[in-house]
Length: 186
Image (cartoon, rainbow, N blue to C red):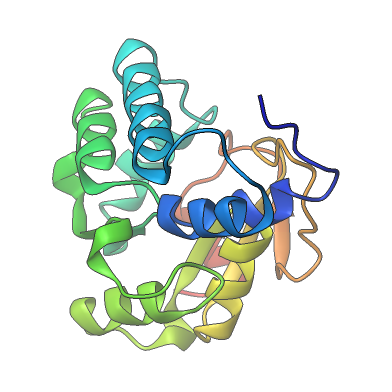
């Protein structure tokens, strides 16, 4: 029964669940306790993922091509169980060297710590990292980590500012290792 104001989505899209809940509960008086709201929303989100996964067009093919040319990592504001389920369902889980969910790093995006932690775990220099992101906090996190960032426009459902990304793509169709190497080197 709480109606969000324009601009609220900028504070809850692209961040961890915990960070989004912190914002909502500090701004609005909720009719039920935080734990009930949080559990209800997270349960609903998990149900949606388990019922239907809608991957970005071309992303599975891109991952299958990338795996032969690059080390892959994933940093998400979603919970680890949901990430692992989705990657398993898409049959790409084994292609990632590191997978970090919201519970694996201490500060939500836009803080760069998640990406920094993943790059340290992979032993890679940020100058040699390309990150694909769709939210303002995610793009800022990637840029602040020192990596290059590609904004994905088709999944920017909240219409967030993607202007800080180094480049933009609508989806992953036509995106492969050759495309990456032509634009950013090996």
